[in-house]
Every structure is written in C-alpha cells, then in structure tokens.
Image 1 (cartoon, rainbow, N blue to C red):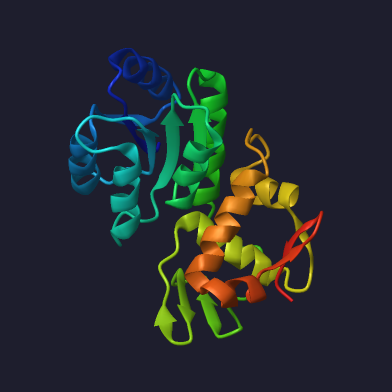
Image 2: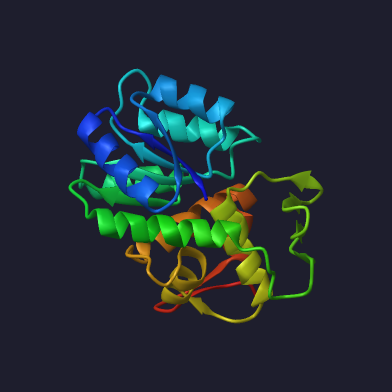
Length: 228
C-alpha cells in the first residue's frame, strides 16, 4: 500500500480521486492549498503527490520546488495536475522536477495507470545490472547509496533524473530511443509523449554543467540519447 497526497482546491476532484485511490488500496492524504500541502508533506512524507498547478496561498510550482529542494522529500514522485493546456505550463512543471503531468479534464482510469507505473518504478528493488558503481566524465554514480558525484561534488538529482543517468551508463555506447526510455522509466502503460524525456534530459544536463552536460549525454538526431 502506498501513501498518496492529493493537493487540489476543488473538493469534488479531491473526493473523486480519494474514492478511487482508496479502492485501489492506497492510503490517501489531502490538502486544499499549497501551504497545507507543504505541512502535510513534511509531517507525513508520502510516496506520491498529485499536485494541482493553480493553488491558493502557494502555487503548485512553488510546492514542487520546495519538495525537490528538501533532501528528505526530493525523491517523492509528483504528478502535476493542471487545467491549463498550454505547452509552457507542462514544460515548466517537468523542468522543476515533476515526474509527469496530466491536464484537466482527465480520465481517472488514465491517471490511475500513470500512478501505478510511477510507483512500480519507484518500488522496484532488483537492479538488473550487477555493477553498483558507474563512472566516467568525472561522474561517479553509486546505485546502492543512490548518490551522484561530479568531480568530487555531490549533485542532487530527482529519482527520475537518477534513473535516467543510470540507464544511460548501463547502456554506455548504445543509442537509447525516447520510446525506450519512456517504457523503461515511466512504464509500459505510460500515456505521455517523448517531450517528457527531452525535458528530463535537459534538466539533467543542466545539473551536470551547462556545456559539460551536452558533451556527456549526446543527442543522436532522430533517434535518442547516449553516453559514449
């Protein structure tokens, strides 16, 4: 059973999601504004947060930033929920650390599928590759400790960013397509599109260094990404 926090100021949406998530066997927490959400997250750390973008007091964007900047909460999975359909809002949400987004009105069945896929990836304990430490380009990635160091300095990555860097190191020299990365990191029943991968790659590169990041993670035009 996973602990899921629903953050939305529309009570009927909270009630609808609470009912369906409880039926799936999850423990449900709720918050109706950004300030309350941060209090709940700090007191009772959830496994996943369904986070509305437009919230009273503190916006969903700022809540997401606070979650990702706190070492204790930075690995929480976040699905951003927004009534806005503009591309810029989706990209902003992903760039600040959201794992996924869904636009209102949405299908509850689709949302449950995305939640299931995210939680499955987070809860996966078996590491297929027996190697526990990857290194190269000044990077040291330790799977057991879930840490990444760049030239001796620790880099704070979200869960998805860590998994993305790990799978690229595991397949060093191979080109991994966007669809392959979606399947492996977001799950086979993920309904998103490949722009999600592009945004996470861009965010990961930025953390590795503006110029160095693009040198480490190469773009193969029309195909995907690789670490040489």
